[in-house]
Image (cartoon, rainbow, N blue to C red; front, top):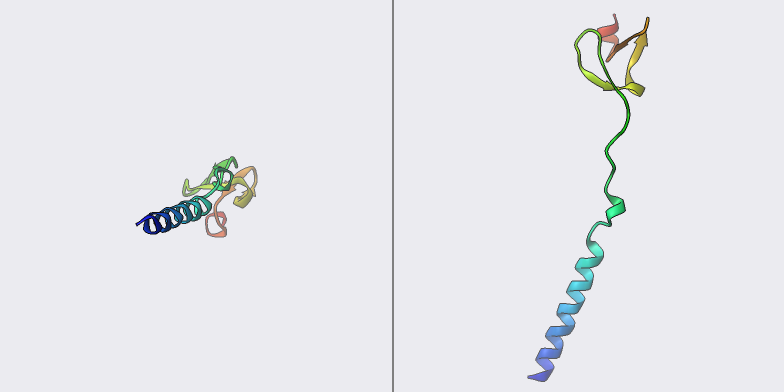
Amino acid sequence: MIKLIIIFLIAWLGFSVWRKLRQPKSNDIPLPSTRKMLSCSICKTHIPENEAIIHDGKAFCSKKCLG
């Protein structure tokens, strides 16, 4: 009976350690983007500033809206 309890405790401890190691660390969670969003001058779709097409001081989401 003691052997059974010891085996159970070792298995429970191993499972607990394995589960703890598989949890994502708090620094693994991606932070929200802080990029500036711009609104397309034609369709009003919001796009990140680095993906926008800027022409004559206006932002466009695609070449379709630009042309």
